[in-house]
Length: 303
Length: 179
Image (cartoon, rainbow over the protein chains, first blue to last red):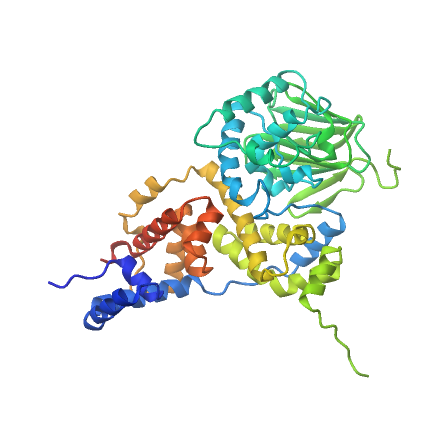
């Protein structure tokens, strides 16, 4: 009875990964076996289908990139040599996810941020607990959330640090000096009666508020770079962000949220009521799928 | 009147982009956007998400170039950044979907993943797209992008053995009921 090589062996044969002896034996078999020749052809066809050329990016993509670059938007890419990034990101994701889901609070930050860079919104979600560690280790009392939120920070850190299977990336952060102040803070704001109000008070004139509408259930707030040095005060359905330096405040607002309002020093920038969004900032812009709202009209001198 | 053209030598181009030249960044985009876009699209199975990754990679490139070492092949370095960005996005998705290998393994007994023979290219691509994400990522990184199991292990924070196992399971699922 003819014994066919395993699919893995045929795949390795096609990819020329077999050593000489096994390859010779497989060749002899394939020459005599129509079924295995068919399988080799199938392997090649599937591989070719997987490698088929894809359409080019949309023609306006570069223009969108240029707008973001001109706006001095900073995106930190996950460089392999980062102390916490890339490779360690998966571990950070695991710990952070649990912390976030259990504790309804998240903070983001890495040793890389401590070098003065801003955090990329698209990468933040994996590094939640790390930032909590930075926030606490930095001893930045000004930035620490007040009230129940402060205790939640401690609770999240404590519970995650105890996870044996998902190492908290504090060790990696510890390989470099931890910045005195956090460079990224992320929070989850729970609505009260389906409503959330976020109020920025005395923000730095260069702060930009990015708003992203998502099909999610929670309202997330991420304060990046100097904006993370603000004081965060919470009460049900409300978050006050007081002071801080130049940076970005990213609001991820669920489309399902009944009402959301973003004010700056009593002036409303954005109002969401059910399916309707009203942007009241005088010089709002869009970057990709985000609204970008300056906290000061253009021409206002910075503090 | 003779026309002149500027021939950008890559190291100079990279230095200019690193220093904030939008023209240099645009030239890098012209040369390498397709590679970044394609790898992101294949991993994310979403044109929209691939464009987001493409944008983020090039917005973040000037800063990232500070860490680029000239001895690295630029396009390979850039592609790896795109892979990492796409994988980070996949992890975010995964948290929501609770995609599990066990569920995927159960699904493999059904004909839904079977690729008809002779191979219909569209059907094959759909079957690849339907692979569970942990298997599909390895399949794409290995069979399309040509990464070694060691490199995939590093990118996905798994072992090289797990990478090989996932590749085997991916092919087995694609083969479906053909046997």
